[in-house]
Length: 305
Image: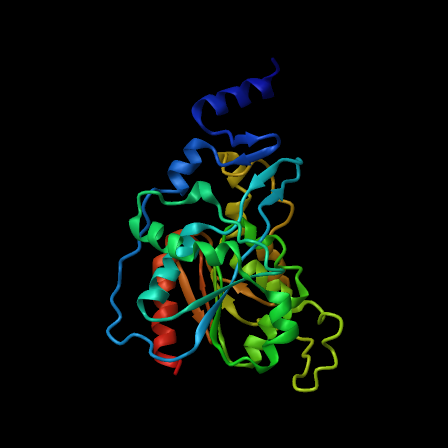
C-alpha cells in the first residue's frame, strides 16, 4: 500500500472520505454530513399578521439533474438542497403565497435526500404536501413558449440552492428568457446558496424562434450587472473535497463567472448572510434559509398586491 492509499484508508476509517453509494456515485462523508446536514433546521415558525390575500404566486425553478461529474470522473449525488428549498417554502405558505414548481423540461425535481433534516417535522410535512408537484413539475420551456408573454400570475421567481442548481440551469436559454421577462416585468428574484449560478442563463442568447417577439426588446447587457449578492463562496467549494463533502474537485465555479459579468459577491463565508439589492434577494447557504425566507416573504407582503 502506497502513501496515498494509506492516507485514503485513514480518511475513510475516520469518516472523512466521501461515501460511495453505487458504482462511481458518492454522497458526503459521514463527518461532513454531521457538520453540514443537521437533522433539524433553524426554521422559526414566524407568524405573519396579515397574510397575502391576492392572486399572485411564486414560480420556483428547480433542477432535474442529479449527478455532478467531478474533475476526477466521480459523480456527486446532488440536486436541490432540501433546507434551502423547504424552509423558504414554509415561510411562503405561512404568509399565504402559493408556489408553482418548474424544471427545464418538466422532468421530476431532484433533491439531495442525504441532506434531508429527518427530525424536522415542519420540513417533512411541507415536503409531503409538495411531493406530487415535485414529481410532476411544469416545464419552463413550455411556459416560455406558450404562456409567459400573457402571464400575470407571478410575483417572484425562486431558485433554491444545492450543487444541482449548477446543472442544466445556467446553460438553459429558456430559463434565461424567463429571468429577463421577470426582470422586465418587475418581479422579484429570490436565490440562495448555489441558486445564483442559474442567473448566468440570463446572459445567453434568446431561444430560437423567440427573437420575433415584438412586445419585448432584447438588451444585450447582463441584467444583474452592478448588483450585489451573497452566495455560497467558490473558496469554500474548493475546500469541500478536503473534508469529504465532495468526491473530487468541481468542474467549474459559478462565483467567478458572475463576477466576470459585473456581479459583486459580498460574503467570504457561508455563515447565514442575506442581502437585498433592488428586486434581487439572496442568501448564502442553508444557515441563511430561515432569514432568507423571512426577508423574501416580508418584502413580498409589503410590495405585492
